[in-house]
Figure (cartoon, rainbow, N blue to C red):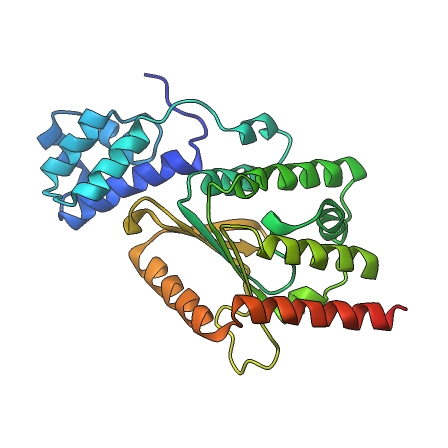
Length: 287
């Protein structure tokens, strides 16, 4: 069986869940391989997502590890049966892998929650605003690269526009005031944000400067809910790209962060009023 040269985010997650299942059972790789009747190298390749795993083999691993979490086992079994490529694969070799993996994460999420401090969440950006965000990077990107990144970001939005995946956003006031592309681009973006906030399945809530503390204030966070809590994922924007967190501790910590945000942010109607007030300020200062 040929080894996968570049396992996808989804494939790597399946492998890490197999490893976590084994470690929770207190088993070494060689011992679990012996129980399954396979070689240690094959066990390692499964956990590294270098080879595929059948639903039957997945259930054999769960049984050998004494795992009785049926919802998790069923969810993992469905992952082993996934076939076909997502639309983002069209951009492989054109954009960096981080872009593709973020789209892959979103496509499989049951619900997506954002916390942003510097800009409007990507899934709610207008084309002009998205282009301006990419244009501000240093060293500057070539115009064609900006165009491709913007096109990719707009295609990601189709998932939300279709209403298939609920989207909850917590946006800091700072992000509402950052003038990527200038005041006219910002005003169009804020109008679009207001329109989106009225769409079914989209929740927009603002955290104003007046709030005393803001958990996660130094990061842009995405919390993607899986079919079961164990398969939730956190994505953190870092200067090097996207960082994906999946350990039980990381998930628990970020659930607490979003819980505090829920208690801190303005309600949806108040948030819309707040956005309108900022629009008036921008219009007044640029009249």
